[in-house]
Structure formats: C-alpha cells, structure tokens
Amino acid sequence: MIAPPFGEEHEDLREAIARFVARELRPHADEWEDARWFPNSVFERMAELGYLGLKYPEEYGGQGGDYLHDAVLVEELAGCGSGGVAAGVGAHIGIATPPLWKFGTADQKQRFLVPAIGGAKIAALGITEPNAGSDVAGIKTFAKRVDGGYVVNGSKTFITNGVRADFVVTAVKTTQEGGHHGLSFLLVEKGMEGFSVAKKLEKMGWHASDTGELAFQDVFVPDENLLGEENKGFYLIMANFQWERLLMALGSVGSMFNLLDTAIAYAKERSAFGRPIGRHQSIRHKIAEMAVRAEAGRAITYNALRLFYEGHDAIKEVTMAKLKTQRDSFQQADDTIQIMGGAGYMKEYGVERAARDLRLGPIGGGTDEIMKEILGKQIGL
Image (cartoon, rainbow, N blue to C red; front, side, top):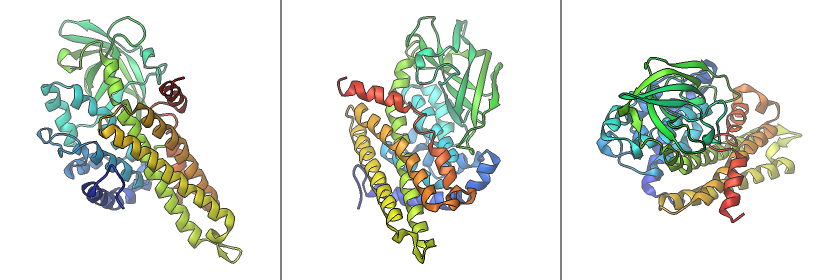
C-alpha cells in the first residue's frame, strides 16, 4: 500500500534506491566506520545514478523531480548501516546545495551547483560556531567589505563535510549590528588563502562522516561569491530550516523501521527457556510498542511532508515531526539493544552504532528544546 503523499513513481524510485543502498553502501559500512571516512567515490557514483540532483532542474544536471523524490532518497539511505554516510550525503543534497539553487546567480549555479550535482564538487554548510549554534544571532565570523569583495576572519565548528568540502556556504556578519541583522552568506572555496581545516573532530557517532572545525584568517572572498543579498542572510537560513528538519525526521523514520525489522528477526531466531524469545510476553510487548512508535513517527512525518510539499505553512507540523522522531528513534535503538542483550551491545551487529548515530537527532538541526519553544509559540503560548 502506497502512503500519501507518495505515488507509484516514488515507490519505483524507492525500490531502485533500496537496491543501490543494499548492494553498494551497506556492505562497506563497517570498513568506512573503522576508517572514520567514506570515499568521495560515493558522491560520484550517486551522481552517476542521478541521486544527487533528484529535485533539481535538468538544466543544472538534475533529474527534474521535486522534494518528494529527495524524501524517498533520505528515508532509504537510513538502511546503509552508517549514520555517517547518510549524514555526509544528506548535508550535500539537503542543506548545502539548496541555498545555491534558491538564491544563487546564474554564474554561481554553473560554478557550484552543476559540479555539486555531478559529484565533482562536495559542499558543506557553515553556520555553527563555538559560541553560536541554535542562536544564529551569536555568529561572530566577520566579513569586512573591501575593494572587490570581503576579507573574512573567524571560525566554524561541527561542520559536516567540513574536511572534504570543495566549497562551504558560509554564514558571516557583514555589519556590526546585533541580533539577526547584518548576516550574509559567502561561498568560501577550498584553496583560498587563509582558509583552512583547523582539525577533524572525533564524535560519539557518525564516524564515517568528516566533521570539521574551520578557520578563516584574512580570507579574501570576491564579490561574485556573495550568495543572495548582503545583510539578508537570515532569510536564507530560515528558508531551508523546514526542509532540513523534515529530512531528519524522514531519516529517523527509516531507521525506526530498520531497527524494528532487526528486533523481529532476532526475536524469531534467538531462543531462551525452550522457545524463541519473541514468544515471551515481555519481548513481544516491547516489539509491539516499537511497531507503534515507528508507525506513529511515519504518520506525523508524512503528514508534515505532504503539507510542506503542497505549499502550506507547515512550521507547526514539521516541528512536531522533528521533535517526535528524533528522541523516539534513539529509544528504538535502545529497545533493540535490550532485546538483543549482549549481542546488541557488540559492534558486529551494528545496533550499538545505530544508537550512537541516532543520539545526534535531538541536538542537530535545532535541539529538542528549540523545537519545543517554536511549537509553544505555534500553538499560541
């Protein structure tokens, strides 16, 4: 049964992506996790299959699809066995290239978006700083106006794809005004003098992805690399928040169903006290709760996706979906570990990795606390 807002075309795409994930990504999950890196050839192969440009126009090398095609991709990527791989690809297609598509000039789209869709250039979004995360008004990285462009000084941290990125869509202050005023975005390119990766950060999860701390020391960025209007960067940030949070919800939904399948399979195979553990009431009831959790997450997320896709103001529904699914997916992993016992705690089964990877959900893309603040205002408080 096909669930709205998806149709038959999307389900055909889902089957194709699921085959790709199972054959070309999942078999390498352990290897890439141990290496703390996945190869750039993943981007190249996904570009070859058209997966990096599903929602982008054909004139830029895309597939001419829409947000629903990207939604299918993100949901199915959850089956790759590595939150780091899903995060690296997701950052490229979900948060770094959309601002180029929406706000870029014709020249910028040719120089950055086209090679990004083609897998020749990898993108990152640079907003978070040591003292500015959810509070983007706290950004300190400053771009001083000079003849022909800007000179940038400052730093960014927790940047997914930050180590490997060929360009970073970078939030900077372009005036000394406080608050959200004076934010702008610059396209900072690898190789620009004074721009460097200060270090690759080690993380609790997402081991296969590269998370970087970036440094800007008197980096000259030309005028043609200003993305959107000067001092109007806050609107650029807000324009993609709903989509980013929907993608996080979709990824968590995919993970919850994958974990449910894992728990069911183990409960059927593992025996204790003379029968499969799935026939013991305590295990059976826990798995029943997991099934409800996954289905509820999918329902609330698909509803938010449908409203967003149809052009409605879906801030409340998207916020609910993000808030509901992130903590729930971590609980789903924890329940799977409990069902599997010692096996769940072991590295070889991949469930402990899922728990570590999913723990970022209540933090990234807006913390649970921020989601509750937004939701409180949306319901009139």
